[in-house]
Amino acid sequence: MMDFKSAAELTKEIKKVKGVISVIYPGIAASNILKNVDLIVVYSSKSEHYFNEVNDLVSGKFRIKNVTPEDLGSKPELAAAISGEGVLLYGKAVDVTAEGLQLKSRIILTYNTTEMNQNDRNKLNRALYGGISTYKKDGERIVKEYPGIVSKINAQKLGKGVLMVDRFNASLIIQTLKTFQAQWNEIPVWTY
Image 1 (cartoon, one colour):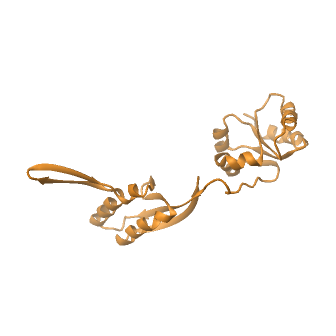
Image 2 (cartoon, helix red, strand yellow):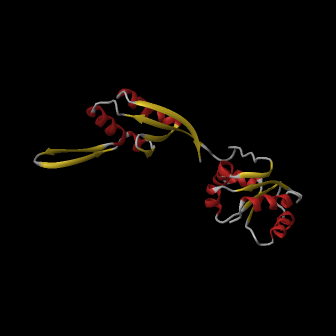
């Protein structure tokens, strides 16, 4: 892996190549997504000539990822990793818009039930996550499973007391939390 000092030195040469608009030293998250990439070079357009010029400067010592703004726009996980932890060594930060990414508007709901009595806490849990009911009918034991709101609306449980739900379905969970007088917070997010 390339150290930061070597990356800065190499960037002085790479930035002279026509068509290079940014050089980014990836952080840990980007490195995990990119697998063994030492530097990310962003070009104004795809050009084998530009790519070859940079590869000649690197002379096989380091691994370079050649991308264009269009590449970043079509790969949100790559753009997120670079912008989240990467260090910009040269050029402008790359703007990536949500246009065309089909992002979904969601809400992360965190809720707290510590101040609720145990009976209400159990009822809320059953309302959210469902449960199992057993009874006898004509001497036969019948087990009936019933789904909760979370499975009905395809919400995701992210952790204890944390749910992510599509924005248009959030009101069902919020109303349930209100009914049982649980404390909650809403965090709007966009996901892909």
